Image (cartoon, rainbow, N blue to C red; front, top):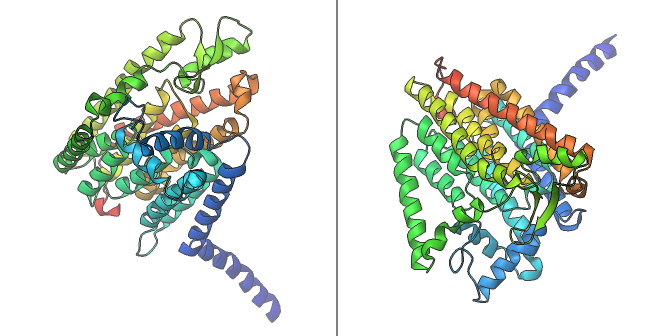
Length: 424
């Protein structure tokens, strides 16, 4: 009988010990390391050439500048903001043959810094633990693209910037502005911070001063108008096959039409839709995106004017702005899904269970993205019905995520939520 009691007590203790082990920093850091090692290995040797943009495009740009031939964004217009060239050049640190590995190491280090900030140095709260495990799961489900594009460099800036938004708004503004000058999308987070923060004046001043400094240095380096060339370069793109707006044409192709096709654009290096109305749809994405951003801004300003607390307003507002940029986008590249990490992490840290829906939707979107890219991307390029279904479901989930975020922003302005800004 005594042995049975001991066994029962030990049986109850084992799950408790397991929970404590999995909830500790050691387990989280071990998971972080295992996932990043696996993603690095897949990028370097896995199927689908997920690192192709890095080794075949970024490296060429970096080498042409190194040899003094052409500096992208300085000597010629470029598709990216000027600071994108910094990590691309840094990846040459150990030579051209190690470019891909160096790039992946750089992204891993940046992720580790952001992960450390997320875990913090004090007592590890349940929400931060949950956010850290969510991020690890998100990376697994999204796959190699999570590290293999310039977007991966901006995610750690965005994560840390949002986590520090309440207590260190000036530092947050600086980090998010730097991220925006690497890849435009963190500008949406700057806008969310300006609306949600009670110290918005400081945020605007820091963002404006840093932007002026970056542009000033670029002009001194000889860029002229090329420093803003990414605006025109993006505006001139066609309707990319992964774009949400491309789904009707993909179903048209599935239906057997010969009027619409999927073609490779050698100037932009992407697969795009060609057919009746495709160019008009591509042109329509810009005003639709602007309208969507304005509507989100209006909802955010309403909430702020009604006294919504930063803790209640900033996570859904950041998520709404970010999702608008993905849904109303003529490009729709798989790496855009990495943008969801920062606002979702912030939502889990500040809102806990209230953000289970966007956390779950983002995980589902991530796994559907990996189903399409990089392993079976070719099936989408021939409009295989199964993969068009996968893309369609992904778009539907993105729309649902946007609707959830807009609703949460509206609710933040309808009822005050007692919170503490220092929770960030």
